[in-house]
Image: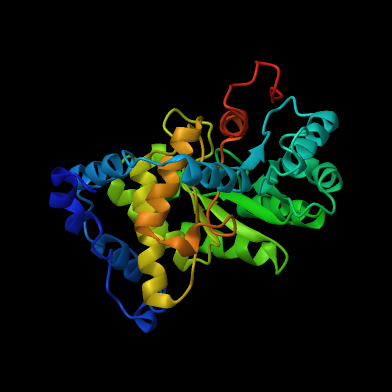
Length: 333
């Protein structure tokens, strides 16, 4: 049950973000001025109400059977990630093996959704997960800063796709967005989507911690979806503020309302800072209560949080055996 406080604000934070027709949406990207008018015409976000609802949903009690289901679902939604300068083929192969068999002692454990690596490691990752159903995702477009010319960004994407990437995680030009150059950001996303071709899905990273306001996160969400994003993603995991229940709730509202207006479903990926099973379950409650069951699938919701997987595995074994494992039960990535 919602608290009285959450009920008081529920109407404000779950209101549709906009009410244009699908036909009208096709016209808003005609020029800088029409796009700006649309994005700045979205209702302002009630920060107090948004945070209150996110906090309220985070208090839901999940019992044993539901918890076991939620843990397995969360495991299946993890994008197991290594994005370090010291990445080696051996490390990527080990990560791929963990994605395919997260718990080698229990083959009933679900595979993760994907492994995410830099473009030069895509071929190694692809070989490591071959035949498993685990996707290979690759960051691109001068990740994480996004400070490069468009032709360099597109070459980055094409290299990753040519090497076999199933998914591309791009970063938007936050400088352009914050300067109000929305059409530039839109055009870059469109160009990257085209470079993905038919073989790779596109996740668009906003770096919400650098967008400063909830209004900007709402605008970025609609901008990304209008440009053809298959997923909208909170963060790179490389800044101080990453995924939070509130900013993820706001993005879930956006994808829900976008589908209501256009019929197009877009996924959501919170990334960075989600470390425990309790955290993951809170996010799954947000998904169910905001966007609905259609998003409770790794085709539409992901966790960009590699350290989360170890805690999920520990909690899974606790439910199965009644005791926690020793510190050597899971690998340290």
